[in-house]
Image (cartoon, rainbow, N blue to C red):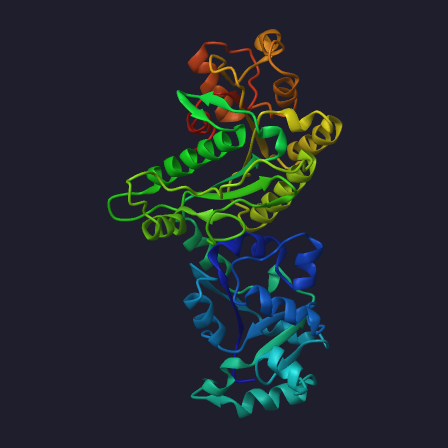
Length: 417
């Protein structure tokens, strides 16, 4: 055929899931609840592909430097590109075909795909250049129905070797309760807030800035953490005050955004959108959306610890749907996702950090909402629990991921690598 392999370009963070599951079509990804963020195609082109009936196809290139790579890198859809090399065994499937040009353009213009093996050989021969593929074929695509299995990947060992030098990432997803139940004023850590919703935003802003400060080095910015924000008011929506992204954002991107938006008064960057407390969205809905985002992140970061979901609330919104949110919290445990509850309580003298059964009686003196938060918080295990046991000297106790009116960032640091 004039070539000995095919190519697929993607971001390095997708490698672990591809190594495990193979290359999956958009339809397969959608069935798994995965929304690919870092890929050659943007959201609009993916939607058009599915609308044109090509969502069941995996797209491969004849050249190692397809034009989509340049476009994706320039648009920052791909940050750390890798090239996956695919065996020609995909042509054993009779449903495999070649689009003479970009498949979406060809489908829109009625340009037929090359499907028979004889025609495929002829197409490749006509587009050969010095033993390779001509520049005219940079837009051509090989279309494989369904999936390309891991066994067809030729350079897996090489990609694994380069993967070992990467730092393990930790994802943190904040859910901010901004419902009308958060309209009471309160004092927190010596500061007065007009509402608990305002206090929630301040707590999360401070935590993100502390994460970012940790990642800023002398010569570079580490991407050790990726952060996502969800707001719960009339509905569940992204809570970012800027258009950085809708889902998880790495600290390198946050640093660039911080430089662009440095406050003139020298104050720290406000990442969370200012919203007055309103609406009464059910917490179970927010937890489900957070789980969907977390699962998508885990799919692309198979070698990383599961995300931590941080629910910031005064607990009042839980009262009408306690059974529902307890069910959602159980689902988190099955996915090994930790639910950390940060409780906002109007009594400024109240402070609890990782309460255990020993403090249950004292916790019961707080509001029913705080007790509900205790019940849905994850029980810590592994390194996080061991560190707290050593610090407190209480070796036989269980510790829950919960803090009331304490320092959120200090609480998280005990749980993070």
